[in-house]
Length: 252
Length: 252
DNA sequence: GTGTTTATCGTCAGGCAGACGACTATGATC
DNA sequence: GATCATAGTCGTCTGCCTGACGATAAACAC
Image (cartoon, rainbow over all chains, first blue to last red; front, side, top):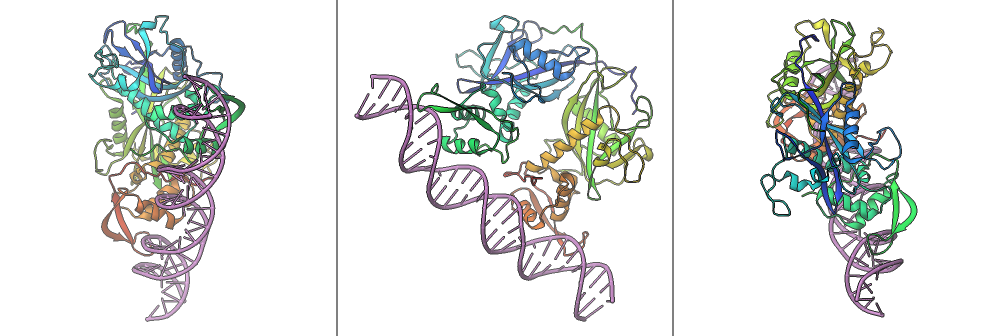
């Protein structure tokens, strides 16, 4: 079938963001409250239209900056200027996913360190970090006893896919450090893994694994006691991006 | 930024297909010759517009059937009716990727057993299985000494991403069986791995690994000598989709 | 000081992979 | 028909990695 540029069905193209972070030992995602129909008042993933002259990655980085102030890492760039990891997740294009018109959404996944507090266009009540378990449970009740409405559109599916991608990706890459501040301890990194996977890991074996993988962690020389207990060495993320052999999640 | 459905930039949305197979010990991809500008006469990946009432996966399955006659597996379906594995790969939306207009392409990856011969709309000269090495080498010369033009659009990038996805995915899933006919031997499966990874594997260790992984292979009871030598047991793909522990590629 | 918390080092056994020897059962060749 | 080449299958051995877990170290709270 050759192209016929004059007779293509028009689509709207958006980017939606799964922005994950670890807060208080829980994996959390950024959610914004919808101010207009459809799904008015419901929580949704942040996102917006791709502009006419914009690349998809640019659009995602722009939305991320608008929602969180974070600069996305250029995947080519070596060190991090306190930014977030950003990658394309998947594309969702069911004809009925938006009741108004045909919208294809290119979802992106962002991993960010713990941030002070979200502000969606300056209005804090319309954006929050919510534990992904809470956002994904259907028709249940949140921690405060309020009934929880499911996410708007197909965003529960998108969030679920993003969480699974993150869970899988920290197995064989050093991406878990994207959840940490610039300097962090082995214990803090372990708590990231525990929060993302929802399991408890043996501190001794974890320490052996991450410090024994060349290029994963670089000691800065400093120590901290911010977690209590014996002072812990501080590290920065090393240059290695792939973990070989990987750190596999424990079996259920 | 709330949606403004009346003022979105219009996009064309296409699906492009990376259809991989193993032929004569080489990883090959399906390529079609473009019959019209831009890139007239150059090779490209098969693809086409997503229709107004079509899901992305449906559009990809339709294009795959049009180009190869293959039925795509429903990922939910258990057994294979001699079909191909089909999954979404990534989405490419650079504003300049198509000189005519703004086109966002949702690339899909298909893995197929060795097929007789491709026919793009009945014209065999406009479709072929080409070794991916040949399609990806820039400005070189093919096996027949003819100069090789690079693929049209950004299709080299898409093909490259698809190949890397396939190489990575057969490590930790049983997807390599998608390259095999319904019944196959351990040696045939090993040759698939060798072709996709471009390495030589130890037959004895490979045999131990794949026959020792529960659910990977199911013996059919039959044997064959189609590869010469001692008769080999025939297997079908088992129910397992994930390989745990994975079969990692050898280091370079 | 005693207890608690967290970090870090060590030990040991089991599992798995790479290297490779040995044997088996076909078809091809002389 | 004996010999050879080819491909398949079973074993062995060694080294690496992981999970389980003991032990020690260095801070803080009381």
